[in-house]
Image (cartoon, rainbow, N blue to C red; front, top):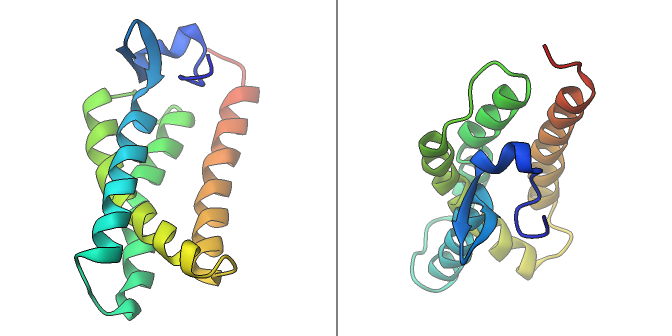
Amino acid sequence: MWLSHHWPDEYDRCAVVGGRHVCRRCLVLYPASLVAAVVLAHVVAWPERLDEWFVWLLPLPSVLEFVAEQLRLVQHSPRRQVLLTFPLAVACGCLYVRYLRDHSDSLVWSVVLTYGGLCLLSWFVRAFRPRR
């Protein structure tokens, strides 16, 4: 379970890599975020004032999809999950760069706590709601 953080009844959310189940979202998110961070730190330069728009808007589709899935408003879709993870990864890359420059960056922490809190809350609602 350490590579998937999903129980066997949720292995549809995983890809099999080397015979082990690995969370599909994490499999896309972390490598893509690292690439985005390197590109944003060393290749692409845009005005830092746009960071606020990017880091709030790019993760929004992925967060909404996660919350809707946890609340059982939509069915899990591997294709949708992967597609929506890429914009999230770009935002995470930007947040990584900002965090490495300033560990107390209020934009970083407000995005992480807001979206992380929403996802965690929706997960708790699902975990403690009786199944139908």
